[in-house]
Image (cartoon, rainbow, N blue to C red; front, side, top):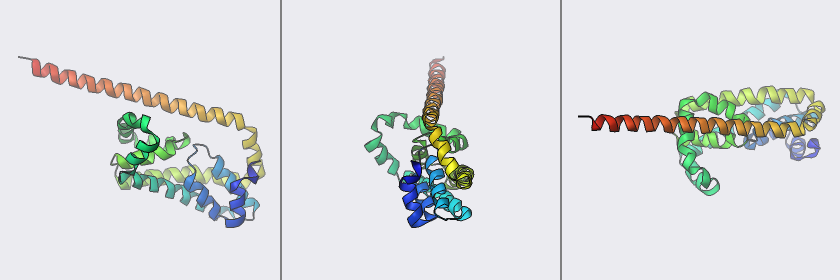
Length: 209
């Protein structure tokens, strides 16, 4: 049962601050962990506002830490160690972030793993700190506040509902990954086609008498 796992243990020992700790590390792409810890804090006698506030601050802190790590070139070492096969695709990911920063950073939160990679790449791609902070903070608020508050108020009904949707959530996560991968491939193919067209145009212009 979800209520007997780590979020419940943290809620009984740390109260609303448990939501902060869970949100810092939660980049699952589904609001399951954040929602579950909010339910656990409510069951342990916590209050709604501090619980959701701490959860939101935790999500913001995790995102901004990843962005700053990327700015300090930490994403390169991280990628080399854990995601070596993805290195050739990094330039495309950076191009997506530069061209569609809001879409990538906000909706990428609902794709498993993207919540880790995208802030890192945003930092390594040199996206402006003020703009990126604003996007990540707004995305954290939009993600945690409704899900966390809803879970807190629903209590055990939220846990039961999520358990009932177990297989559906797995398929939803897979669908998100497939959609993200498809969008990435389309963007990459179009980008390479544009670069090839520009190269051909320059070559043709240079060869003209």
